[in-house]
Image 1 (cartoon, rainbow, N blue to C red):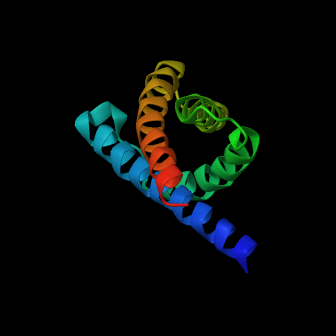
Image 2: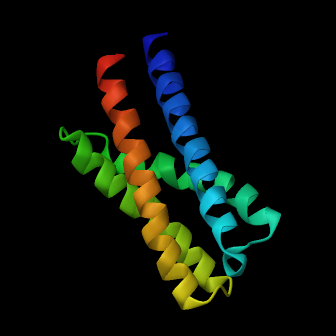
Length: 121
């Protein structure tokens, strides 16, 4: 039962990160007309972002420094998503701009959530 609660707690944490990430990403895409994307972009971000966040958490889980964990976690998720968008045909300048934006959003959110998780064991 304790193990199940552990996994549920981390799945909720990742869901909060991804929902915040989606909201932040939606905001940035709405700032400029040339940054508009189709609706499926956000749906796919939830699906693939969540899957990659689980992998990134597995890679970084044992790191004691929460901000280093957030840094590597964010780099993994943002990089993989942007590589995917590049291969889908998005222009390189768009991909690089949003690599930076996605990384910042994820770093702030994951750092905050990881920090909160430390106090809500």
